[in-house]
Amino acid sequence: MQMLETKTKTLSNVIYNAIRLDYENSQQRDYIGISEIAYCQRKLYLQKTRNEKQEINPENLLKIYEGTSAHELLQSLLWRYRGRLDGFKYYKAEKEVEIEGVLKGHIDLLCELDNQIYVTDFKIVGNRKFSMLKDTPDEHYRIQLMLYAYALKLPTAILLYINKETGKSKEYLIEVDLDTVAEYIQKAKDLKYAILEQTTPEIPFKDEKESWECSYCRYKQECWNKSFIEIEKKDEAELIDSELETKYIKLCDEIEELEEEKKIIKDTITASLNGKKGFGFSLTATYTPPSEIINYDKNRLELLVSNDILSRCAKKSQKAGFYTLKQRSS
Image (tube, rainbow, N blue to C red; front, side, top):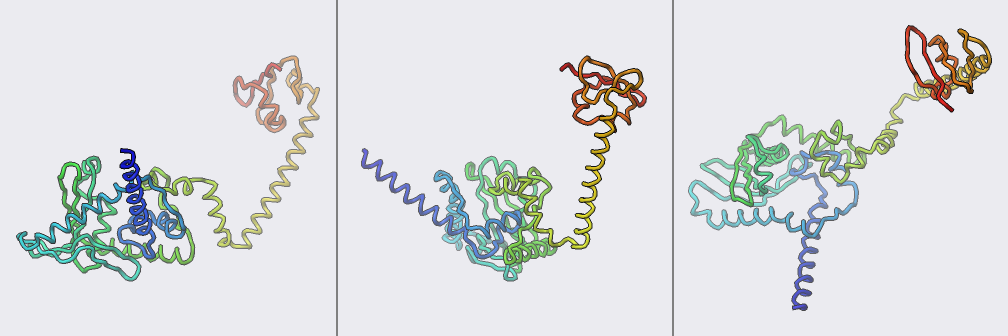
């Protein structure tokens, strides 16, 4: 029994390692995939410019390949019985397509239904995902199918969701919109240029809650860390007009000097009030005991009394230009 367990574990490890190697190999693309262009451009840039390996739990590796296995099964069945399925013609599976030298992908199936040729794509999902499907499919899948159809000069495509737990299905007919296609071809060109120039794309969202993509992205903390964003923004300094930059720095220096001069004058005036009488009460800069209630003109008090003194006083009321301040117990 012990030997059997050992052999089983060893074989499992071999299988997991084979799947891991295949998955890592599939992620090392030297092109921009049609299936990925509708996702965050910044994420795609970081994935393609960094030599990083994503760690995946062995238990999740087989789940990744559930969809692949189901695709291959469906393709095999349709091919095997192609001559016995009325109104259906099987043309090609896993056909590679390319768009303007910047986008590349592999379609699940090219077939004919009732004399109409379609690009078709299968999405194998669980109960939760299937229950969330609405009248329109996921936007990134819609874009993917639209680009596939455009690449083959077809007007429409079919997106088929299959619930792997119940066997139920939901089918969408995707029509090609040329404006949308042009938008994503341009995004692919921009991304390709950014990769060549090593220019990180801007974050396309206002905050991390705007898109579901951020929730599952490995770069989430990096993108939404404020200090990281500020450091990256500094690279844009070279775009600033040098003359304006010099003038701005000079003004900042002058303001700093004026603030220092203002502080000196204020401290001098405050010091000169020690022991003096104002409205019948003694105004002392350090507010030493005994406790006193001091009524003094609000504007002059704010000007003449330093912040550290005010912070040691409790504000009791504010009436018609006067503060009523009471010294805290020492």
